[in-house]
Structure formats: structure tokens, C-alpha cells
Image (cartoon, rainbow, N blue to C red; front, side, top):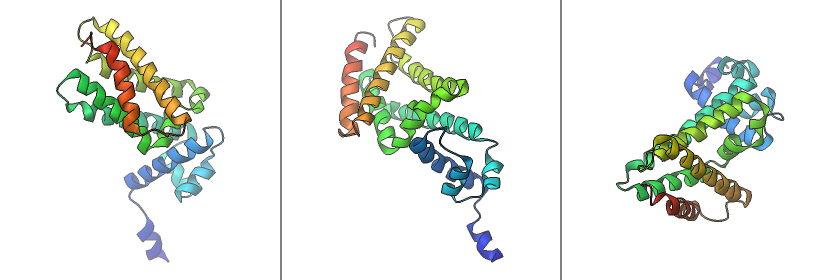
Amino acid sequence: MIATATQTRLPAAERRRQILDVALEVFARHGYHDTSMNALASEAGVTKPVLYQHFVSKHDLFEVLLTETGDRLMRAIEAAEEEETPRRQVEAGFRAFFHFFDERPAAFSVLYGSSLAVDPEFRRDARQVRDSFAEYLTRLIRVVDHQSALAMAAGINGMSEGMIRHWMHEGRTRPAEEMATLAARLAWGGLESLA
């Protein structure tokens, strides 16, 4: 019996990753308030003490998940940045954005869902994701000062959030590639004179 328990024991980093992956799905399905640590532990296949070894509270777990999901989204967008022209960078960024949520629909609920209303820290973390995206966009806007570029980037950010909400609400019936093309077309119409 001891040998079996040892074989299923994961290294701490792998266990933490497993808990975060499960938590993303559970929080997306039930929201922050209706998710209990018992449910998270059960779905992750761990005991509550193991869960608490990795996260001191449900609040801590959700905050880590929110920050990590935002970081993963930004890394996906920045990885698409290898294109030579600003227009192609915009197109690649939107492709990465829509593909990220197509591959991880639960990430949408965590980054844009109603759970953010629960706590000012959650709203702050979600704001940091939006701000990072806006800063990314300001690098493509070259003919105005930084503050003006940031304001314009916030508008593009709002547009992309509106489009992702629409797409998710409609059940992702259009391919991610098609949505990315529409978003890039709309954004580029305004950016073209600024790049």
C-alpha cells in the first residue's frame, strides 16, 4: 500500500500545476462564490490539506489563477510578435488572442467573468492584464505621444474584449481565425494612420 501511495505522489510543482488546471475549469463552471475548497480538492484528486499546502485560501488560489492566466495570454500574444510590419503584428496578436481563448474557454470566464466583481484585488489583477495588452499595443502606435497611444490602445482593448465576449456568448460558432481577422481589420482601420 505504501508503494502505491508513493507512485501516485507528484512533485510539488506538478501538483500545483494540476491544481491550477483543475481550478481554472471549476471556477469557470461555478464561479468564485459557488466553488468550495472541498470541490476543488475533490476534482483535483487531492485532500484539502494537500490543497492548503499549495494555496492558503480560495482567495489566494483564485488570485494566483487570475494572474497566471493573464500572464499566459500575454506570452501567447507576445510570441506572435515576430512579424515584420505593424499590420502583421496586429493580425498575429489578434490570432493569438482568439486562439488562446478557443483552446482554453475556461480562461475567458476567469479573466472576464462575474467572479471579478467579488474582490477589489481580483479587479486589480484583471486590470493589469488589460493594461499589459494596452502597453503591447502602444508599441505599434508610433506617431503620437505615449499617453495618447495608451488611450487609443485602451480603446482597441475594449473593442477586443467586446468581440471576445460576443464570440464566447455565441458559443464560438465562428472559427478563431475568422474572429481574429475581423478584429484585426477593425483595429487596423484606425491604427493604419498611426503606425
